[in-house]
Image (cartoon, rainbow, N blue to C red; front, top):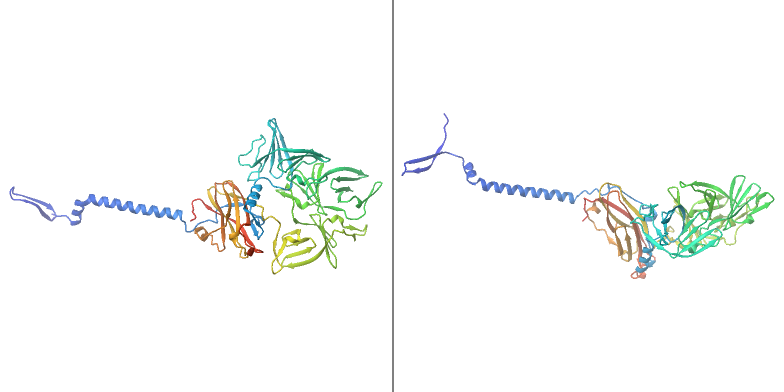
Length: 553
């Protein structure tokens, strides 16, 4: 029999009634009286805790202390040539800088490109060139349109004549046409020209480069005539180049006086013939024969053009892109104490001195002897030579030959600037004013953000307040602006950067998207003082990227 505690809860004497109730614990009694209020308090407390948890979770997502910036997969076409920036006190006005920048957004101003395909239909004549540019002639209205390549390098027009919305174009008009012995030239009002009805049709970016016998300083020249002497075949080009095929061997000459013809006999009397040292067969069916004197013959089947300076032939993916001025050279031949270069020049090293020969075919040799018989009057005598570390610099009367383990550069001597230790500080190739162009590609399936910066070298002694830049992408144009220092934020700390960097632009790339960047630096003419003379800024363009889910404060 259980025993329970009871208590009197009501005593009613009038009705002679007593109400008894089992004794409860104080806690239970409190709960019964206040349970509704307690439930409300518990609910509010639960909601408060949940809200704090959600806030903390999102904060950790948005402000990640360990940003994985360097692991985002991007690709750029930045090379050392493009990325490395050197500025001096040579200043530009803002108007000039803007004008130069906008010009660069249209079409390149120099060089020649080869016609690779023509489409002719009822509405249009479309011509595709080796550098990715194209032209379209609309027959109904008689207009010519030049079309730049897209950012990925592909043509900005299809075979139906439809121009991509992302392509830069320019409508040009014909100024005049002129017939030369080697072809027809159509001159346009933007200063360019088209060569047609020739052995190999080309587009000339600067029509001022067209001469009666050749095109540009690189002497692009067409065939003038051919003849056979016995079993020996002669091909004469308009610039004076002569290709001789004798006993199935190819030789190149620049002067008819170097060849003696007697009946069917052909003799190379000055022993200065150049033979083929390298042949390249391009993937689009052309053949380039590189000769020991630095020249080249480009062949398309049985048609050909001569190029005096083979270093001007630019190839990419085993295709000819363009023929354009270039100061970087290679050695094309070494004969005794004479070094031949791919720009058509040579250096003679005698025991007492050295000479630079601008046109190496002017060096004559004794017949059946091989010793030099004469050198030209326009030779340049060596005035100074220095070798510091891996840099050898020969300074001639007007020209400098710079040789390092990575390259050979032949330029006017005034363009080489040394530091106090005699080491090359700068080679002024007059490209400082030209915009740098490169591409950025998002290789991921995520939307990413990127930041383009320029990292300042410790060697810099030019005050950056006088530096200006302008930049454009497909989505952004930054008008001439001062450099903005990248202050220490989470991205800066995550990358463990120790150097001084300046932010140029922040951008976004969609999954697998590619964007083109054009960037130009200069020193400001209106503000730079005389105290900045002989001062330099050295920097390197860099690109950082991270997932769009992360943020930069």
